[in-house]
Length: 314
Image 1: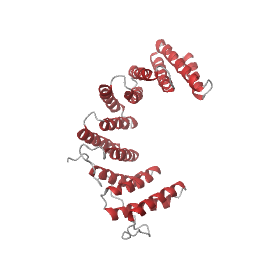
Image 2: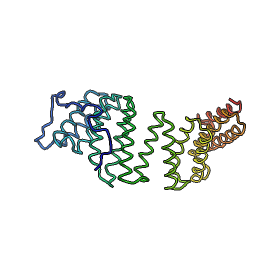
Image 3: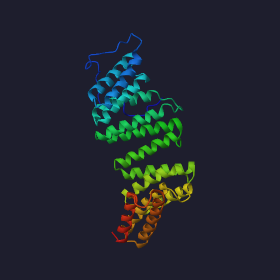
Image 4: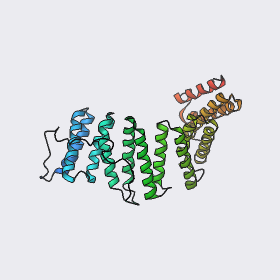
C-alpha cells in the first residue's frame, strides 16, 4: 500500500522514553492478569484525575502504556487506548510537547491498521489527526498540521471515493483548519468545493448544507465579501424554512446572523436598503424568540439593543 503521509514516526520529534525507569512498581506479566491490570490502572488513573491527583494519574497512565507494550508489542492495536489516555492527559493540561510523541506513535499505529475499503480504521485515524494537528498548531508547526490533513484527505479519497462521507468529513476538517489558522482564502476554496459536492449529492435545499453555509458566511465576513455572506445566509434561512415551516429557534438564530450581515453591509456601503432589510429580519427573529422563550430574556434584550443601534445608524 502506498504511503499516505510524509510524517513518519520520529521525524517530528524523538520517541518518549520508557516509563519503567520512573516507576518502582511493575505489573507481573506471567500471572495471567496483565490485561485486566492494564484496565485497572487506567480506571484508577481516571479516578485520580477526578480528585485532582495529577501526578499519580500520569504515573499510572505511563505504567499501563509500558506494560501493554511489553505484553502485546509496541505496534499492537491494544496499545492504542493507552497512547490515547496519556496523550489526552497531556493535551488537557496544555503540555503539548509531551503529548506530541505519543500522538505521533498513535497516528502511525492507526495508519498500520488501514485496510482499503474498510471504514473501521478511519474514524479513529481522523480523531488522532485532529488531536495531533491541534498539538502541532500550538507548537507553531501549522505546516505539519496541514500536511496531516492533506494526507488523510488523499487516503480517504483513495479508499472510499471523492464524495464519500469520510472524504467530505476530512474536507470539512481541512476547511476548519484553514479558517482557524486565518488562511481564509484557502478556507473559502475548501468550503465552496464542499458545498458544491454536498449540493449535488443531497440536493440544493438539503439540511446537510446548513453547517457549510454557516462556515462559508464566517469566511466571507473575514474576507469582507459582504454580498456573498448575505447570499449564503439567505440560502441557509431558506433551507431551514423548508424544514421548520418558518418557525423555530434554529431559524431565529439564523435570522439574527443574517440581520448582522445586513447591518454590517449597510454600514459599509451606507445603504439604506440593507438597513431596512436588517430591521425586518431582526423583528422577525424577535417575534420567534418571544413566542418560544418569553419577552424578557437576555436574547430578547440583545435583539432590542441591535434594533436600537440600527435605528440610530450606528
